[in-house]
Length: 304
Ligand code: 6V0
Image (cartoon, rainbow, N blue to C red; front, side, top):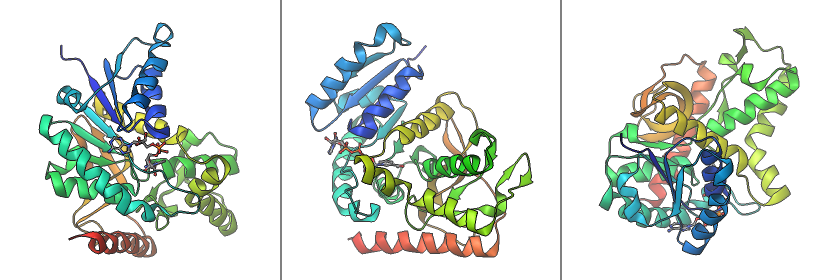
């Protein structure tokens, strides 16, 4: 049987934590770490390999782009991290040129893998990757608003004193400042949430601004995004058909086309098998369109 291989490109805070999470949860047979700073990848591989007697025993090494050849999933977390006070969008130009060179190298050896992108601004990086590679849309996935939705569910659960796993709630749109909550669909056991408008405002603001709060406190965010990336990999590798708020190219979706945005999608071995057809209110639709227009404007502003 073919061994499952995951490659992580960019073994900084997010990449190494993601690799460690995948390893602990025994998600694949082989795990390859690639970084422009090869020594960093070598150090991470050694460090994690020394824990192998206590884990599931995946084969793990610091590799090169040649190792992408056999990969099932290639996770890209390379790039510049968000600086204190810097918006995700400020990262755009720095990260687009880094990405160009990475995907060029990947596509020389593998055109069949699923690319899972986490580098920010994630929706735009995913869009550019898709536009450059022209692979089927389902195989180029951004982590989208999966992390934001997890933060949202956690904060709702905290307020209601309910396990966040029992809270069904979605953040959609840009992974960033123009994202929006779908309060009309939020529920626990099918029941609408008993929250005041003030509570809702607080919960959403804390969700949207969580990254700023964490970066202010410790410089970077990586644990929750690593778990979110692990969740997406699991949905793919186990062919789950899980509904996850990942970023995908939208076509004719609530009046939106030609932009990557985080929305509920069915994820399985094909990647994004289907974008969920959800009913949202007119005001939610308007906010989603604003988010799409913001990203389109940014894409246009840096397109040749
Ligand atoms: P980091 O700790 O600076 O790591 C980035 C890594 O990328 C470093 O090890 C670099 O050496 C490496 N790198 C840079 N250029 C290249 C290249 N050309 N090829 C290979 N490796 C390269 O950053 P951190 O890990 O904190 O963040 C990585 C990215 O994830 C940033 O763009 C963040 O903004 C983004 N995040 C995305 C989240 C999401 O929800 N999608 C959440 C948190 C962070």
